[in-house]
Length: 220
Image 1 (spheres, rainbow, N blue to C red):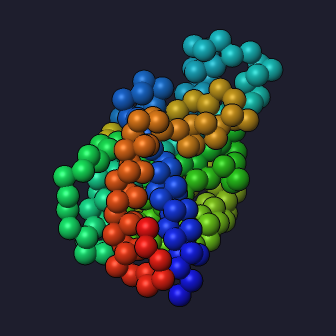
Image 2 (spheres, helix red, strand yellow):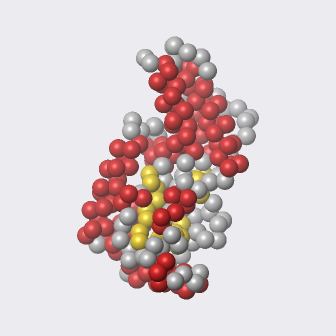
């Protein structure tokens, strides 16, 4: 066992678990209150309305688009899963009460799927599978390729399947207008610094216990 490599991987995992936070109370993030037969029209109408409301010119609207956040949940679920998985006793340390999303998908202003902006979170994988992935990038790439094929065939069908497969409700889903897709990564990895730091502290404590239990070469 390579202790230093394992410790480095653990820290990388902590950083990955810190990603994907979302503030459902943000007014820019819209819950879904309807079931549509034509999602293409629904989201195109939304984009057009946002263009008008935010007074985006035709020139700059070419860089605008749409983001969808699927399978939103409370971060405490991940802490509980990790503690159960690695038999770590609960303590009284403060834990962030922020929310995470499992994955986000981006589209341009014509609803063309932007594959390279897909983001599948480590937290979302753990919540759905109960364990850490061997390689989250492989998981993300496989998911990306699958969605790319589906959206190439038909936007409306692909969206309908995603909404059904992930049991979308007003609580676990949000969508938003992205004024400039070139800056979309800000939304993709958006989180409050205070919440992020609390999450890291909690995860570091958990991961330290895990490493102390399973590594036989170094102490942290």
